[in-house]
Figure 1 (cartoon, rainbow, N blue to C red):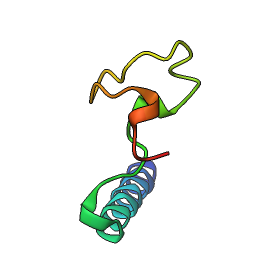
Figure 2: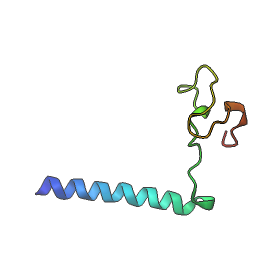
Figure 3: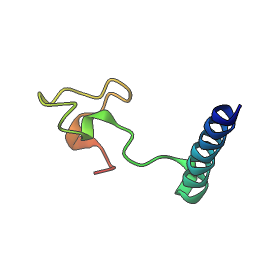
Length: 61
């Protein structure tokens, strides 16, 4: 029971942190969600599978 309560508390803390981040951002959007920005994910310069933009076209650099 003790482990369950600790786990539940940590999950609640994580959800609260995400909610605060969304609340604090302009228009409630996460910054840097496009995978094409990350060179570890996109070594060959392919367009993003989510939005279709090329790495140089992404506005969240």
